[in-house]
Image (cartoon, rainbow, N blue to C red; front, side):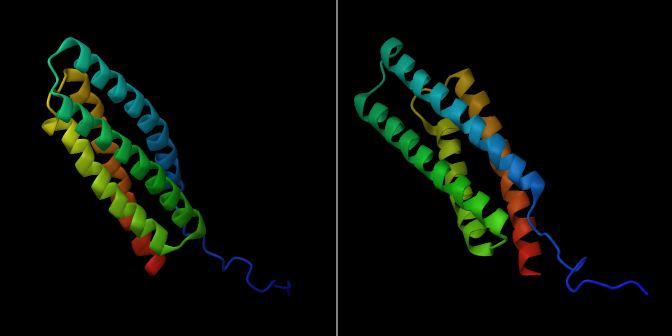
Length: 143
């Protein structure tokens, strides 16, 4: 009869590899999105008559979105790797707020270029995929 080590084979890893990969992809894409959106706001302010108060609002919202993305990705990665629900749930809440800011840049900013629409739509799709996976992973952690 073979000796069985206690605990061997009974350890279950709950962290999600696809979610972790999506966090990395989203972080890289957001860096591109931030740079492209900043440059497009600068372009629109020079080429079109862009009201100053709307320009400041768009820049502040873009900066706020950047801060939220950093916090969202950090908490999501930490929650997934440590298999804890609270940081992952906070990341999910930040994902919802960041998605709303993406909708602003997709529909509600003063001047929306075609490239704004494409970049924001891709970002919304990534946020939707992450939110879905985060809900599944949180449910698995709780169970």
